[in-house]
Amino acid sequence: MKKAILATKVGMTQIFSENGVLVPVTVLTAGPCVVTQIKTVENDGYNAVQVGFKDKKDKVINKDKSGKKEIIHRNGVTKAQKGHFDKAGVSSKRFIREFDFDNAAEYALAQEIRADIFEVGDKVDATAISKGKGFQGAIKRHGQSRGPMKHGSKFHRHAGSNGACSSPSRVFKGKKMPGQMGAKRITVQNLEVMRADGENNLLLIKGAIPGPRKSLVTIKETVKTIL
Image (cartoon, rainbow, N blue to C red; front, side, top):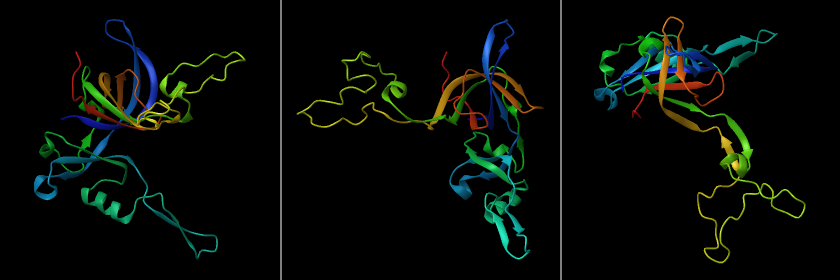
């Protein structure tokens, strides 16, 4: 892998290709990411590049109205994290990820990775946490069919038979049943980059990408190309 970047999802729109074909695309705010650490075989046992994305405030300590009691806002960066970012010479970041770049030795601390690392036509894989749907039945969760809706039927939206009675007298693992749906890590492979704007930090990728708006998306060079 030689190309990767962190992004947040803006939404979906559509553009026209050079051939005049209408193409649905997902708009991403990609980067800029900064290199916060370079891991080597000598120090860490493997080669990788650690990058940070989106600024985050440090811990803030305020006084109450009396001016005596301190109020600590714990959603900020800890001292250990701040020391890590200060060592790299970058501001505190909200998201930290590692990329196993083939050319990891070519990167330097505090180096920026922008959206123009990708080019039009590149094939990428997009990884994100899908939208959470809560507890759903078998029809919505697995696409099963419903039963008769007339009065005599007692089978409408139930999942159906769970298994045999006397043998094996249990429900097999993996049976498609109602349960929690969504909120899982999903990777969509072999998507095409339609536009890459380094100045405005925008990536337009053909097709849909998992997750709600403003969610974190990891864009990597694809691991397998589908012709």
